[in-house]
Every structure is written in C-alpha cells, then in structure tokens.
Amino acid sequence: MKVEIAVGTVLGASEYVAEAIGGLLENNGHTANYHFTPSINDIDLAQLLIIVTSTHGAGDLPDNIQGFARDLAKQDLSGLKAVIIGLGDSSYDTFCQASATMEDILTNAGANLLLPVYQIDVLHHPIPEDAALAWLAKHLDSLSS
Image (cartoon, rainbow, N blue to C red):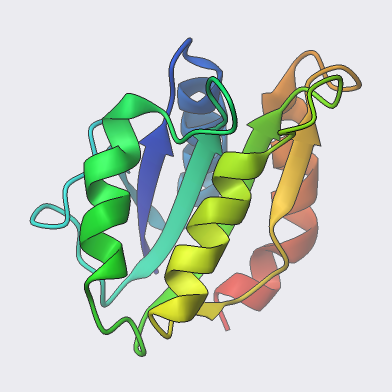
C-alpha cells in the first residue's frame, strides 16, 4: 500500500509523528510519501491519505497546511480514504481544533475516514510519536484491507 502523509506543523512535533508512523508503515511493507508543505498537486489522492496536524493559535491550522486544506475543500473526495491524527494541548479550549477542521473538510467533500480522528494530548503524551505508533499498530490491518 502506498500512503500519502500530509503534515501540518508549527514547532515540528507533527513532523516527528509523521516520520514515526511512516517508519512503521515502511517496516510493514508499505510506502510512505511525506509532504511537509502539502500541495494538492503533489499528493496522489487515489492513495490512502494520513493527515497529521497540530493546532496553532486560536484553534487554527498551521500555516503550512492551510492552502492544502482550502484546496481539499474544493474537491470531490468521494474516492479518498483518509486518516487524521491531531496533536494538541488539552489545557486550551481549542484542543485539537485543527484535526476537527480537517475532519469537517474531508467529510464535507465526501472522503471516507477509515478511523475516528485520533487526538493526542501532549500533556499526557509528551512524546506524541509513541502514542501515535501504539495507536497505528493496533489499526494497521484495517487500513490495508
């Protein structure tokens, strides 16, 4: 299976999570394509799309993924299979709002979310890639079937 991994990040934690889950996928015989400045022109939407994004400011998407999100919202994504992983800090009332925004964009455009959005609270998981790896390992079979 080929997987496209789009990353929304400000401080880099989402990049670490993306690289960790990509490594897990590759260790299980899949191909991971990383997009640290995602563009709709560079991502094969016929493949599984995993979006890993943090939340910035007052619940905003990070700057590097905002254009991609706008472009996705204009597409017919009825053939797209996707997974979303959000990173956030539960001490803020906008906890993981960017992942919820991406969920709204994808579902409104017709995409099929294979799993409920996985939200990682960095207060409880200071190394979020460990939480993401454990979660993805549990669901890996359901993604490739």
